[in-house]
Image (cartoon, rainbow over all chains, first blue to last red; front, side, top):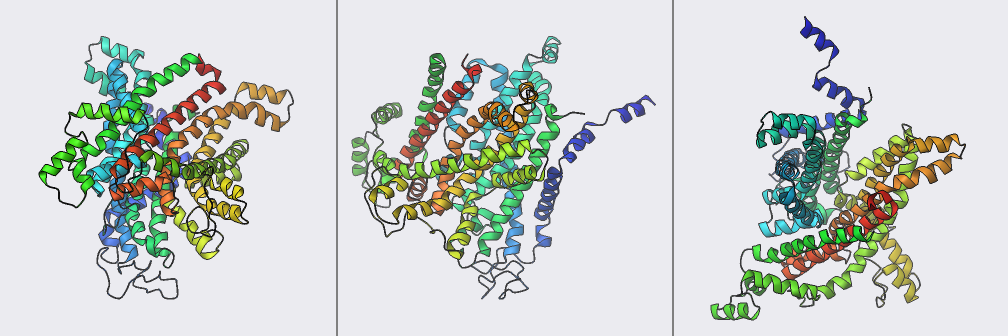
Length: 296
Length: 334
């Protein structure tokens, strides 16, 4: 009986989170769009009308269906080689979400580990780690990523590694600051006195209490990764043709952008909408997770 | 203040050494050795190869080479471009004003629009004005600027013919650079129409490069203002019967500016990174395009020198921002 009463007076963490998150209308819209993009990526082979990499003979640069010379076979027209734009854009969601996921996870895991070590042990280790992060942050991130890719060789995988490297200092700084704020608190001291080992203190006691800003940062890293990867693709150093990555598609279309603007409009619009949706979610997450803003 | 300055400088030196290490090791991380990279496609006899390695001092231990490199860098010698054979520093010096002019215009554009927009959004919190400003700011913040640039070119250059597609000034005008800033030089040249041509050429690149800083500044100003407007001293100022414009403009804005100045300073890295894309789209002859071209032409001494110089500029600007932060916020100094 008591269990039921507790349940009715104290909402679960998830429903409390949803309560604050859903008060931000933009965040809910962003979440909806993100779900749509995610479903498109998962079911791309079912949704796409054509194979994204197979050109149609004599169908080069067919304009979208609503213009005079449009062809109902190709809703958003075809590209310079005669491949269906819509199908390429649909498959492109896979690359962008994959890039965002891999980069956000890689940079978060590496950054959180380094930040935990720096903030927990302090001293020389801390100074060393933070100086290395200062060095990475002294370069414009896109420039450093570009040069790293030049060293590693152009390609999607190397672009993701490079973007993860330039993205992780933000996680290190955030984690370190949060850990320093937590490590002298009573619950940590109590846990230490009770005999908890270093690893337990770091990962089970302190880390869960530092997660809120890190989750927000992870969504920012997700959208930044999509933008950076598209920028590298646009410069010719990211995913290589014929990959239907949106930035690479833009690079392919550059020489035709004055005569066939739709080749440029749609991939960019896809990048903008996806990144915007994730950033909207990020704002909502910050509202929901930042205790300073909660006023009940 | 002096102690503050010395403290900041003490952090700067190891960072600069780290940056130089990255720039130095960059060439050595590439497959093949520098001599092979410089000789390009040509096949070199092993004896000749060894001779060149010796002449360039590349057969010495790596740490000796690094110290040597650092010594040269301190004396301003960054080597010569593999492609043009001109000294890297000289090339940088001739191209940097173009990037500086563009970046200054972009940041002025962002500040002039971003701060008032943020202030009004905060004062009119929750209204349609606030919501539209924040909506537009979020779109700007999420914008792939290389695409944004192409869209603006299609609309304003190709359809409306208001602005040129690329370059700093129309090819009709030619004069010797004096300051390197096209706006000033075109005025100094006295040629009719030159200034207008330079000004029109700047508009689209400025908007493209300024978009993200504009969004960041507007968002930052709004949230800083909202925080400050809730403070007791603002309520006191209001209850004294001060005009709302005085309360907002004088009491609140001054304090709200502290975090905004920091975020403006942080935009320098964003601007130099954005310059890579903006200059590529608009064929703007600045250091961003220079670096991209160098990466593609495998001009490694330029990449190496450019990395070092760009990082150096960012570090110096960050130091200045830190000092300014100390000046406008006395709490930090002590």
